[in-house]
Image (tube, rainbow, N blue to C red; front, side):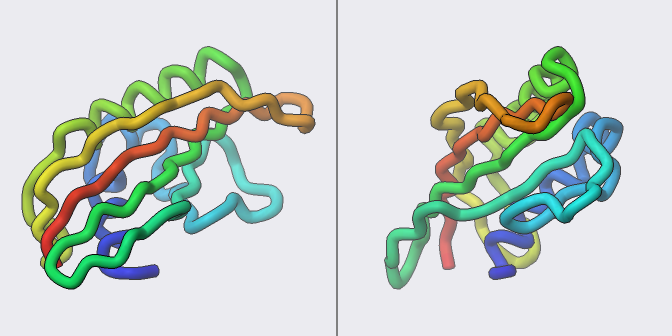
Length: 124
């Protein structure tokens, strides 16, 4: 995990609403087998290179056992991240901007998924 990845995880684990849903079940890239739901997974589908600042796109995937719960989880993730600015883990985050949160169909019965994309603008 990079420093900016860890900063995003810290923001989420520090938020009481997010923590009430997932506790510490926030995993890099994908969920481990047998993971208790609800949970989050985080990955960075794009990360344009810049020497002084960065603006990666993060996908925070919300996972739950029912549709209402996954909708509620995506809303608390949005509330925790939207417009965030400040210094976290030594990184100056200028702004976090929500991009999109489409419903995702999953083949596994009883698993609901919303992949929520955010643009994170920060100074290195």
